[in-house]
Image (cartoon, rainbow, N blue to C red; front, side, top):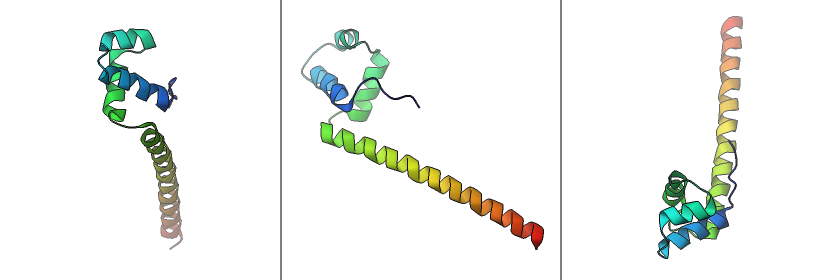
Length: 88
C-alpha cells in the first residue's frame, strides 16, 4: 500500500482547522486533497491527538506483521499435514 504524502501531524492540523470553522471546500483546495480524503481522515483521525495517531499507526503496523506471521504459520501447518497424509 502506498504511504500518505501527509504526516499524522499534518492531517491532524488540517482537521483542527476544520473544527475551528474553516470551510471544507476551501481546506481541501488549499491543502491539495479531495473532499473524500478529508472525510476519510476525519473518520479515522477525528478527535485524536498527535500521540494517539502515532500510536494508532504503530499498532496497525504491528497488527500487519502479526497477520503475516499467522498466515505463514498456517501455511507451514497445512504443508506439514499434507506431507503426513501422503507418508501415512
